[in-house]
Amino acid sequence: MALLPILEFPDPRLRTVAAPVKEVDDSVRQLIDDMFETMYDAPGVGLAATQVNVHLQVIVIDVSEEKDQPLVFINPQIEILDETLFDYEEGCLSIPGFYEEITRPRHVRVTSLDREGNSFTMEPEGLLAVCIQHEMDHLDGKLFVDYISNMKRQRIRKKLEKQQKARA
Ligand code: NI
Image 1 (cartoon, helix red, strand yellow):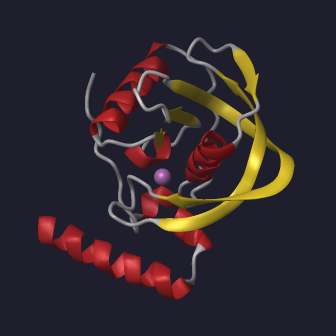
Image 2 (tube, rainbow, N blue to C red):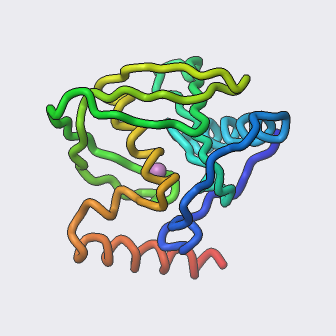
């Protein structure tokens, strides 16, 4: 396994739209293992392949306290089950140190492939539903800062660019 470097906003590669996985083979499973290792190490509750500069529709998530409920989503499709909205203060490993309250539908249905390539469906609510929507946005090249005001987004961009320069 390997820790993968995580792209940070405003890196333009985060705007790439991910392609569907054609075949769930060992190379995809290796990517999944590396993504889990990277996510747990960060630490974070979700990671999309886009964030590690692999532009395939692959997501890993674990929202459990004990970090023992890994979830894998390959080529996920989402449907909103209930228009009731849910506010959650979201963070992102690609936007380190910044948190903003984002509003999303609270109950969704997700149909996806698992790490063996088998199809499954789940109907998450609350935090898990939010997390899946956040990660699916990454696969579309979207970030949570796209939902906040332009002024706030530019402020975050400037602060992150400064940090990135200091590190380079
Ligand atoms: Ni994120």
